[in-house]
Image (cartoon, rainbow, N blue to C red; front, side):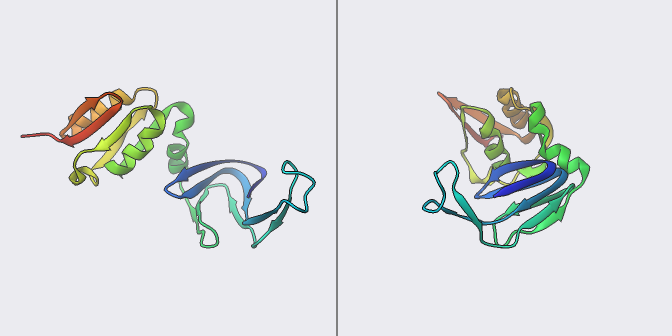
Amino acid sequence: AIQAVGTAFNVQYHRGDLELVVTEGVVEVANYTLNKGTGNSLLNPLIQPQANPLTLVQGQKSLLSLPNSTVESISQEDISSDLSWREGKIVFRGEALIDVIEEVSRYTDKTLVLGDTSLANMQVAGLFNTNDVDALIATLADNLQISTDYADSTIVLRPRAL
């Protein structure tokens, strides 16, 4: 359960964890148990806290994997990067291509596939538009020496033959 206390924040699901970034104010996070039998309906259940809440303030982020969540401070630049999706942009600063593909896949109905695992750790940096995934793929192909094979709704990325 995430409770805002006069705040602005972003929650994003990423590889089995929820990433919470607090951009303003304070957010409390706690693990809760839902007791359906004691509430008066599923819309108004009795929720009981199971642990002390984790408190984050502006400029902090956490991967919410309770009870092992950690809190770290992040720069305003990192916050802006994390929230760039709100303005139709994606910012990458040296992320592995496999992570880039995972993120880009959220913005297209096409399936992006690495045709060779040797590409997985290639680093990607740049600012891209979320509404033009084809341009992003073309830029990756040009800058990383990757070939792109389009088949129906699948795009396969492979090393470019020399």
